[in-house]
Length: 358
Image (tube, rainbow, N blue to C red; front, side, top):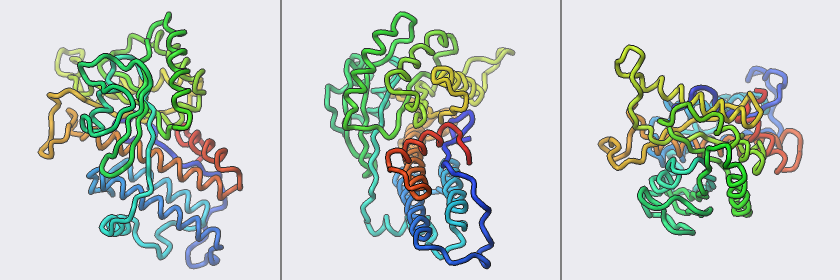
């Protein structure tokens, strides 16, 4: 599992093919396969460059990066007929360090749509991502003591030199009577996203909310599915705020386990999304967030969770990795059956989160 997840991981979609031959006995690769191999290598290098900019220097030991690299390697074996290390290509880690040192432009932008309940900390998280005001917002700034977001707004800026755009949205109400209001808000958000197609959806809830609201949460999430389509969940990451909260006591009255606390709440939210989407295969990654000004910080002044994780780097890495996998799915789909780019990207993104074949 990825850090912060109860289970599951983004996956590259592949269709089964014959096993690859040994490198010594393999026939020379066709120009098309050589081109595909080079493009997959460029995707690996891009991921490692993004990780370096987030301060993830031990990328080989990071489980998010390790899983993405494994999926890309597996895809290359199936589609090209050889593993990446069977070629003479430069080691992607070395290549990432080299091109970063050379100052080569990083061709990567990210658009995020933030959805979730009212008052759970969407706007506060966006402020934290852009370091409190270093970004341009299309509406009035929203902070911890400002009124909740009333309409969709766009926040643009750079994070470690990476262009990021976030579409903030009005909060949704988790009550059985709020269906019409939720749908009206969501339709306005959908209209706002025209021309700003999100790469990733962040669905916000609270870690410390408890499990008492499933009867109201399912209709609220079903409204999201009706307005945006169930495919909205295929590239969605669950964000649990207030993650610095202490876990409840265990049945014996002693301090509870933080890991168990996170796993139980993550499973609850993931299961609610599955019910709302009508897809038992969905397993959305989970990221943990704590925006409180008293949140513990490490020697580098980065906010850390009770488990020691630097939450902002982890959240951004999950977002970047999800888009990288979408790019890979689109590339592999186009190379395999020659379909239009839009259809390939849609199919790849859906399978990546839904646990399709592979």
